[in-house]
Image (cartoon, rainbow, N blue to C red; front, side, top):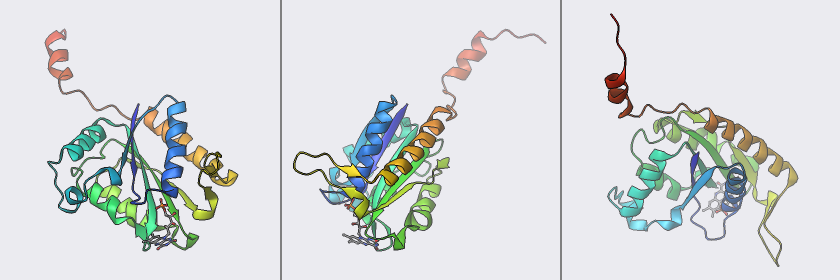
Length: 197
Ligand SMILES: Cc1cc2nc3c(=O)[nH]c(=O)nc-3n(C[C@H](O)[C@H](O)[C@H](O)COP(=O)(O)O)c2cc1C
């Protein structure tokens, strides 16, 4: 199973990034291969000018095409998901998320905008034809502590439990994902089939 993780915060030190990292590690413990991308990896001009032919954007597109699912993390910015993440989603092909499960992850300063994923991000994921958009995991800043003085980053137990539950469902969705038919397989099957009329 292959998952692409997209970190949508433009900040170097990122709480949504911490939550995403927890999710990534949990999936890896379940034997899932996770390929990481961060919006900060991309040249700003490539994103702003939607340079579909940028080598890194093409590599991302190829990984997304192979992936069974995506983890997409974002901070809430101005009651929506980050504009940087939008520029990245904009350079994916129209049906890029067809046959894929997506688990959205969002962090915010307060719970006032806890529905931002529902009213802002999910329509974009639907436009990309995501097969299965999961409920998602939302956290406020106080629930996530950065690593400091040798202590690793920490999540509040209630948040950790919600994340674990969401990942369990996400992992189950990855496992039952219908495998698209390999186009090379049909001619091969037809040529070796035994026919009777
Ligand atoms: C430009 C900007 C806009 C923000 N807008 C909101 C907002 O509308 N609602 C909210 O609850 N928090 C808002 N926040 C707080 C962030 O969502 C919050 O700190 C988040 O956890 C940051 O995630 P990050 O550390 O991954 O970048 C904003 C922060 C910034 C820098």
